[in-house]
Every structure is written in C-alpha cells, then in structure tokens.
Length: 398
Image (cartoon, rainbow, N blue to C red):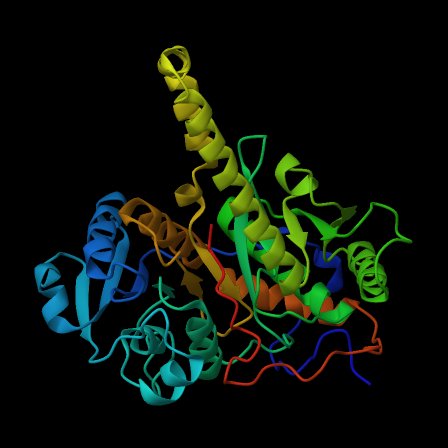
C-alpha cells in the first residue's frame, strides 16, 4: 500500500485553498545566480563550453559561473570576471558505462560540478544549478546518487521542449529516465513539469496533457486510465490545470503547455521527431539541388527557408531538466555547438533564478495535502538504484 505521493517532508504544507497562481504561492527571484558548468562534457569539451560561457556572461550581468574541469584546459578563462575555476582530474567520456562514472571516476568534472549543488556541513551549496553536456546515463546516475530525490518524489524525470506551429514550444516529460511507470509516477511528473513551466515560461497554471492513443477517457492502458483519474483529482483539488488526454500530433500543435508520458514513449516520440526533421531537411536539399531551375527556386526561397530553419532549430531548445532531485541539473545535447550550449545555460539560469526547486517542493507538498491516498496497483519493478539501470537511454536534449 502506498500513497499517491510519498509524504516524508517535515516542511509545512501550503493550505489547500491557495491554488496554483495565488500570491501566497509566489516566489521572489534570486538576485545573483551561480551556475556550475561541466566544461569537459560532450563531444567537444572546452572548445564549445568556454565560448558559450563567455557569451552567457555577457548577456547576464547578474550571473556567476563555476567552471569545472582540467585546470590546463580552462586556462584561457583564468581571469574572466565573475568566474571561478574548480579543478577536476578526470573526465567522463560519452561512451563510458554508468558504473565507471559512478564508482571509478570520483574526481570527474561531471561529478565535481554536481557536488557544487550540495551543502558541505554548515556551508551552503556553492551553485544554484549545474549544466553538463556529458553522458546522459552517467549524469542521471551520478546526480541521483549525490543529490537524492526530493521528498514526495519516487523517481526523477527528464524534461525538454518541442517546437510548435504556434511559434513557441511544448514541454514534455519523461524523455527516457524511466521506461516503466505507474500512474502515481505520471502524476508526480505532471506536478514537477508544471513547476518547470511556471518557473521558466512564467505560466503559473500551465495546461497539462496526458499522452494517449486518443482523447477519450476510456482509451489507453490501465496505467494511463488510472493516471488520468489521478490527474483529474489533482485538477479538482486545484493543484494542476489538467486539459485531458492528448495525442502525438498535439505535441506540435501547441494544444497544451506540458505533455506527460513514461520515458519509453517519450524517448520514442523524441527520436521519431528528430528523425522526421532530418528526413525533411534531406529531401528539401535533394529536391532544390536537382537541376538549375530548382536551384534558382532555392535562391528565391532562401529567406523563407532560413525562417523555417530558425523556427525548428533544435539548438534553440537545448537544455533538458533532470527534475525531482535535491538540486537543479540541466543536460545539454552532447553534440551541441556554442550557441546551443549557451541556450542550455540560459534555461538553467531561468530555472534557478525563478526558484524551480522551491516551486517543485511547494507543489508536491500542496498535492500531498489535498490528494487522497491511493493504492499503487500494478506498480512496476523496483526503481533503478544509484547504478542508474533505468537512466541509460541517451536522450537528445533537443
């Protein structure tokens, strides 16, 4: 027997009458935000991360950076203003197994960067958020091992965004951290995702959709139907703005602000979208290059094609949040260039400045207070431990 959310927090709960967008639930932004950056992670390391950090600092005068990595590789940034170099002697490679990152490379730039989010004795954490382009499975496993999950959260989830035809984007989770989920886990994802959208996009009551094979409440697996019931209860209690079931095409229509699904479905949806975008790009290049007439047409259409590319450029949406941990960790795409990595820094900065961690905690506590207890029927096998068994899919943080 288990409750919908595990209430192990000693913090006082918000009164149920406060609702999502009430003044009592408002939080004051941080004045100065300090990010810990794993400068060695990803396919390119400092050749990408350092220029991105420099551009980020120029655009954010209230930000400070802890640049983590091999001191000799970060020598160029030694005298940058608002920067501190934190030395690390090892690097987690993109193909390193989770066990290597977790148990052998204990002084890796990834691990040291995450450690900056932990309080050391009576000393407060040195950083408000961490950003890495390193191995996704290793990042999730090390983050979970060092930071642990928030009270009331069983499993962390990966959240990122997809572009929509409305010119904005839809946030989606989970994208690969948990391949098997119960209805209660999906409710937790919805609560965490709502806090993320509220912090980063300023939408205090984001519309939440449950990804399904149809809009009708009778469709879907038993887990999905049970999750729909819990989400409707949370909506009635004023803890979520639940739109209802959504289908795959709603992700790109912008029907809702947040789409909730398990990590298996989310990862397949993400990779399918990436594959489709790549195919359309290849077809356009092939057809416009077919002969001199089509090449001339391409020149005439160049301005339109550039605008289309800009609207769907995955680099603009880089930076996936690892939600549910006792610290803010953001994952950049491993192959990100400087522009993409800077956008990951921007997302981490916005989340930390708008106190995403506090928002997740407050929403979880409020949901715990208002949601009735429920039995987790058909709960999947035990969640992955610190070894990161269920954090192994390499998720592209589009």
